[in-house]
Length: 195
Image (cartoon, rainbow, N blue to C red; front, side):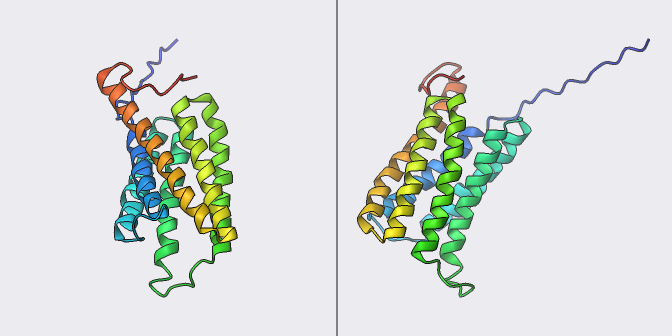
């Protein structure tokens, strides 16, 4: 009888979740400071949407697939492409490629992302409290923005900006907590129980 030695490959790659959470969080905070009315839509938001909110999250998602984390892979790649698609929706009309999206079409766009995010929120019940707050507040944000566009309610969209800043800050907290907890090998910033 021949003995077969199994080759075990250990994954020593970095934890990509802090990168993805920070890419999402910082970009979300900046866009929603705009939504709250503090500055105009500008190149800074587009740049963050393409590079940090978009490409960095996609990189983090691809790295999550190597760690066999389907939730992280799907979330980071999806929200990375959300940012790229949002920038495309805003830039393509300015380039004369297509007509601008109407408020009602943006309401559908934001609403379907709200439904998608709600499904992820359900998944966080098996993860930790910090991610529950990130995804729960993101569900609220998408629906507030969708209703604001559907009803042309500028005040609701402004209020959604403040809620979006909270959502982004919760993602920043979660990303920094995961990073610092790993660096120090102990809980520096709590994220809640991990199931």
